[in-house]
Image 1 (cartoon, rainbow, N blue to C red):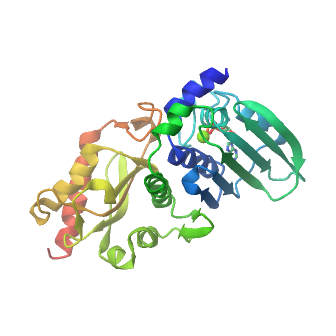
Image 2 (tube, rainbow, N blue to C red):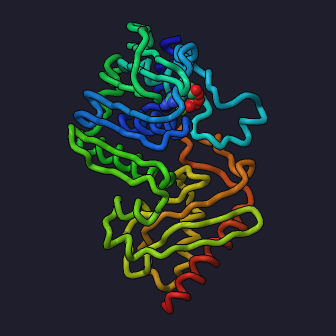
Image 3 (cartoon, rainbow, N blue to C red):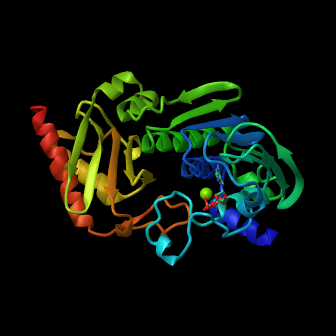
Length: 323
Ligand code: ADP
Ligand code: MG
């Protein structure tokens, strides 16, 4: 079973950024309004995610570390309409198999909680805790027992950049949640959590850049889109500064980013891309999130309808700017 979890970890947990993503997504799924992410030595020494979500029932904490024991899917039907970010029940057991993980959680309405430590898949500590409602997961010694993984990690700056990217995209997907990223004792990123997407873009790219982004919005039969896109004077030579979110989830979808570019038409030089963030809301039944374990590549039904909508909305918005 430890082996199975280590193998699963190989798929889900590649690096500190994957740990951050999985833990922060769990916090979001738990309805947290504040998510604090603490890293020491780019995650080699510590990755800690603190949330003020609903917490985990004391008796369910050991279960959270059992593979496929997700609390988020009750039946097959649910699998096809997943709204929550996690649904495989693989992240915690995978992380705990390749690190020293301590989870402390106190459920809403409960007088105390439980602190549970697992190292290399074995329970090494289990005791009551008192504190506040919510969950804290601390991951130490990541990949200590999988030397191949450890060796594969890049320089701390590179790993840290990947963590920052994960946190930025989550903040763009959830402007109503306050995210904080602390690196070696210093807060390097913080969002207000007031629902203002343009403000999150300012937190990430700077105020000047965010001021050159204009709101876009529209809807069609199956889709609703909204977000901020930069004016043609502010472009980049890569798509990395353009975040596409489907039902809050950051995705990589070539047709969507292409449709945005098409909307700019000749106002965009070849090889240049706008900056910004675009949310796509759709019935979860129209999206297949089951394509890849890391879930960043997705398949959409009615893609033609969506790309036509995006192109039209972007073109109309730029025309409104007299460009
Ligand atoms: P999944 O998210 O796919 O369900 P995980 O392994 O990530 O699987 O988490 C297992 C379970 O532990 C979740 O289904 C949830 O019930 C619980 N859990 C994990 N993290 C948190 C958290 N921060 N707050 C509340 N519950 C959590
Ligand atoms: Mg999860």
